[in-house]
Image 1 (cartoon, one colour):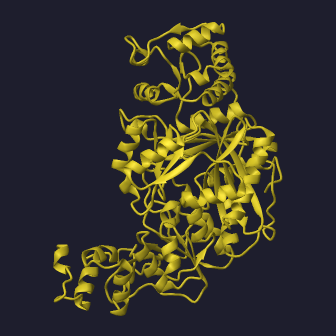
Image 2 (tube, rainbow, N blue to C red):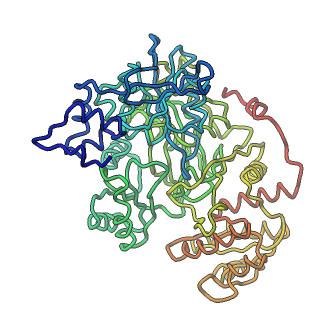
Image 3 (cartoon, rainbow, N blue to C red):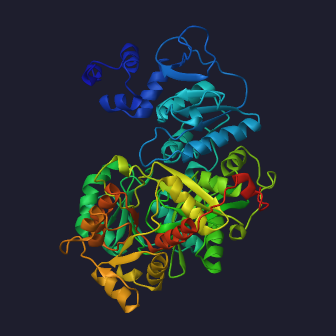
Length: 609
């Protein structure tokens, strides 16, 4: 039916019959509000006044052969309601919505663990999610499941029917957070960190004020709504800049811009992603180390769940980067500052439940990049690596328990007797000629973990699990930026030579290696002539690539090298820290005899549980 059929005019007001028919045909309150030039809230009030509300039907999983007992429900505008409301105290958890490339399943893990924990506390657990291919939507996970979109209208309809004790919005990632404030304004009790605290963390101006109040360093930043204002802010902040919409999931539409024209192009194509919020513009810290810290706060005490060091450079989305727990290259000063800042931020935002903080360390200075007062993508990894069930603890805290009641204590993760490595899994092999350069927009579809008593073996296991086979012989190709022409690059090259590899390098890198007595051959860059690095990859003359880009031109080179490496299944590394880790892994693989133990045996090595 065409929307114009329902167009409201002065002579043709919205009648009960028209509104009911519109809802039966599937029009949302928001669509009708736009058609009738009203507010969505006004359509909702009118609908309730006319007693036009949805009923909930049970999904018949038995094809009508006999009565279905599965607690699946969906809404429709009919007359009979099949969802029977119990008298038990209820808590609703909002899931993560549909899974897409660049959106992992980690949030579903948090939702399921939250359900398990609160069932232990005696609550009836209700899940709202629209993805049938998740554990949170299994028939035996929750007491009741509503297959509904995670929109304000649909969630409010369910809350009107169920009248829950509270709703948890912080386990499903960014999707539920978008409607948290509106839910609260409509009288829905939000459990955990308040929408106000969430908004402070998301609103760059308000968050900046909090950082200045707490005297915590951060990269220069600004916000903009228009193209010209964005250019002005970028020039003030200084290039390169990271530009992104606020309130987006998986780093969607984030981009690193090196020039004014790039900022203009970005604003023209991406400002529509989040029209109700400004575009955030941050100084991009190239060549910095990045760290993630997960914690749980009960409003008074804070327990650090884990401190993870990213192997890739700062600026790569945490869902795409490999990371190590415990951190392996950090000073005591930086470690202590990160712990201190995390506790201050949790208390400053009045966090109740989970919080994730992303730090960058450059020249031994700690900067806060971002704070998420919600479940993060690293929670499952930290929980499995340490034995501390963060999502379960957070759920109980949100329902009123304290960390002291739950017996949670701080633990120095640097004293762990095992090393856990998280590695991302990418879909690039399914999409030929796709740029493989990693950046602030998440592109992975999952993750794996390698665990052992030493760093090299954990890296090797994680690479095997992710399907990234590292070579144990052949030729390694180097092209490193000027900042990376250091003792670390020399040590990596010598390490590979000691393992039996030959070295090829681009002109500048080769000159640097020869100056430091590292034997190597010289090869053209992509734009310098033929045969170049891509030709060598295609001809099977290169088995390992170490290419560390810096700046726009070198990143464009990396795209060409990257897809050639992907097509010909050549291992491709973009940071020196990842290359150093790969050398350790190759050493372990060549030595042979990797250990095999259950995760329970590793966790028995310390007393954190």
